[in-house]
Length: 270
Image 1: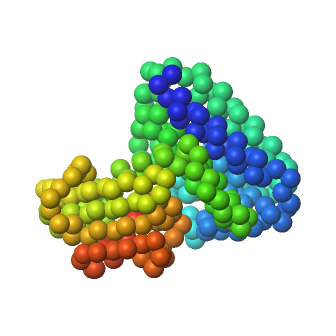
Image 2 (image 1 turned 180 degrees about the horizontal axis):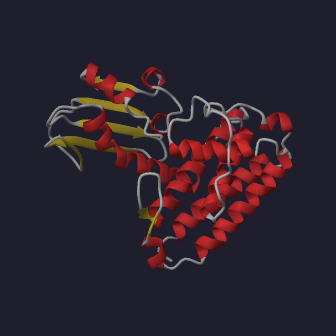
């Protein structure tokens, strides 16, 4: 099928998540993650809750005020599933995660190519099913890295999900450069990524809009070189602009003021 690569990436990422969590203690599950207010237990319950929702479950009712880190409707939905499942023991959390993701994989494997192209609900309006499920890979893969970090077991777990993550964030750079960084008309950005998925990305501004270009003879207004892992962590909001710019793997040339605005604008996490 045309979208087997998405299913394979989900299957691999979810399988690695479940294996990482097997035989962990309750204390491990209570370790705080990089996600504000969430422990490992909460991160896994979030992943489970999203799959339950996509498989037809209703969003749980929650009483009381939302935590300060909940900023929008999507955040409320995520928090509702997390809060309603915090009482579960570690073993139950893993079992429910395995069951929910297994059900999702079975459902996706039954879809035909036309169904993958059909629009479905997202917080930003209808999007094709393949876009929604690609986003599930991104969310799941990044949360797997959150789990590794919270366990103090960082690893180069590239996997099938990493390429999807880096490609999606590369596609967001024209918007970040033109709209969020307020780069001037004709200003060129070059981002050099170093690592397994290394590449050089060029973006310019045309008629106020960011446009990716294969190559250009124009001297970049800003040129940033950094590691692939630092790039996606910045885009995912796992490190801030200061950490990005101070990293030993990061080197910046060009207009310092625009570079600072660019670095401060990279977090595209909803």
